[in-house]
Length: 138
Image (cartoon, rainbow, N blue to C red):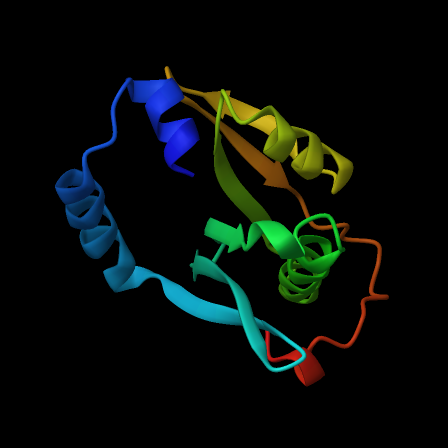
């Protein structure tokens, strides 16, 4: 993540990052991603009446490209689908790999800032077929 922060803002300021994330995390639910008993990542999200916003997802490099992120996102999207609300997230403009991943999951760009794209996946109001996510705790 630091690489993308440096590409976007030119520097990494540890104190600034800690301050930003400590303020942001008060409204955000965090869940550890566990695979075969090992903590391999974290997902953070917040929700309101109209959306679930994915604030962050990080998976250890050695566990990336193994379908873990797709599974986590699928569960969150399925829960949003059940509630008939959209799923949103922000992605740094310089993080091309993440943009490709989110596009593959069906997210569409709805807004952009100087540094980020805001993406959204609207619920399919005609589809009530969604996977069971309760067993995975999402």
